[in-house]
Length: 157
Image (cartoon, rainbow, N blue to C red; front, side):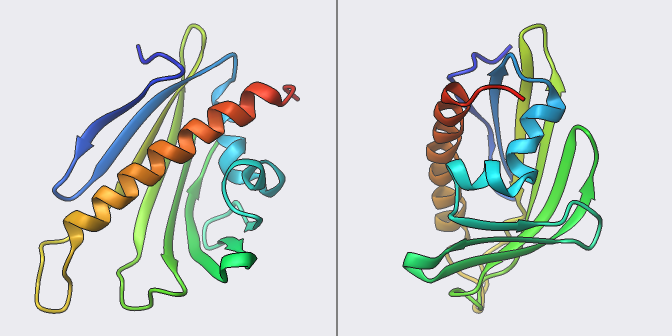
């Protein structure tokens, strides 16, 4: 079992990035709510979010000070799984990515697994996929630590 503070890289390429972390005293539904409820999401990643948890719904996170907008579409939402696509407005030539967020019950809370990708082989029009995966890995590790810290200081519903 994964320690709640530890963020493990389970797979790093070439096509997918998979990370896991334990979330103590939080059910899968509660854990997933930190990715699906805008007010919670804004506490640890992004400043403004619009999240429509239905297939075809919008998944938008904004950072107005940096003029960054991440836009995506929800593909699936259940009590324990969220799948959405995303891309940056300021990087229109980069491919959209898919994120699968899954929370499964453990004896002490939940095991959170995030699968991110796909990353494609380099081509003349698509370069730096290894750099993109590395950047996404570092970003996920950083912000999952922020999620843990935010959950620690936020009372459960």
